[in-house]
Length: 156
Length: 156
DNA sequence: GGTAAAATCACCCTAAAGTATGAGCTAAAA
DNA sequence: TTTTAGCTCATACTTTAGGGTGATTTTACC
Image (cartoon, rainbow over all chains, first blue to last red; front, side):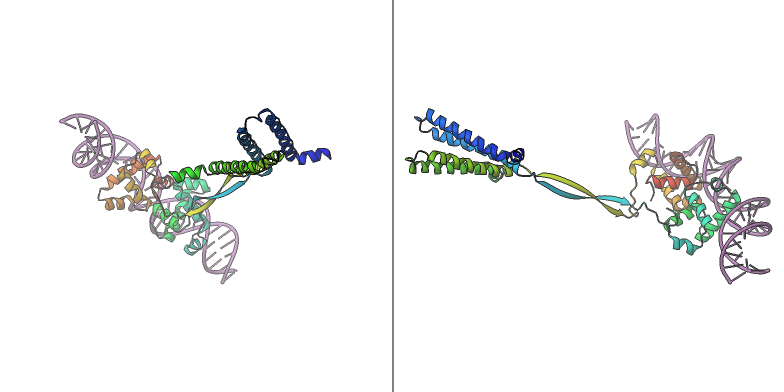
């Protein structure tokens, strides 16, 4: 209870005590330098400085530190990396699931032989699918097919 | 310049001026109440309170509020149409101007024969350039070259 | 002028891609 | 049941691409 009272009024009590001590000191000094008249300005000056400092100290105790929150928006460039297959285009062209698989691997730079291995079928099968894809895309060679398919959002 | 001086030392100047004014007031009051001896304690008390308040005011002025900067990233979509050639990559790979031209047309789906016609050179020249490009890109076929070049931002 | 790099061209050979034709199997739709 | 679409595979042939070797000309730099 008493501890509570002290904890809560600590600053005020300290302020009062220090004020009392200072007044006592000044009274004492008054008796020592009573002959010197201009000493008053010195007292006043000292008093002003001391209590200003005390005020500053009190301020830091009584006031909560202000926090200025500044929100800065930073633009981050995001490329259209998220490829989305154009299903409608695919259906419209009549390209089958398997045909698309072949096209995708073709675009990755795989040879027909490599694609065959990847999809566990024969080279002939890949050639067949390629031809079908070329037909549907109305192109003559793989580079053309890849270029067009990319443009039509069939491959990334 | 003078404005700058004022702006920067505003608090200090105000403090000095108010101190001078208060000292003048006390001197004036000293002449009015010189007969009453205990008035000194009143001065001191008033002085203490006033300068404490002044100290508090100063503290609020001198202490800068903390700035908490929060950076919010805002995504901005960039259309993939804005292709920018990676000149450094190009130079690093040692791909010549002519070689790049061939690569670009290759990516558009043109056959070697067609590219030769486009650039007014022989088919052999195109084959030579192709081989050089493949070598520098460390690939074996045009689809691979195109795929890699795209990834390295050499072609759109 | 000398040198190196880039561009151009030729020829030979092989590999890969692309075309044409045909066939078989399975699942789904008519 | 029949038809259709999709997938798989084969064979024969043609075209294109790719690798190798070498040479000449042009261009840029010292």
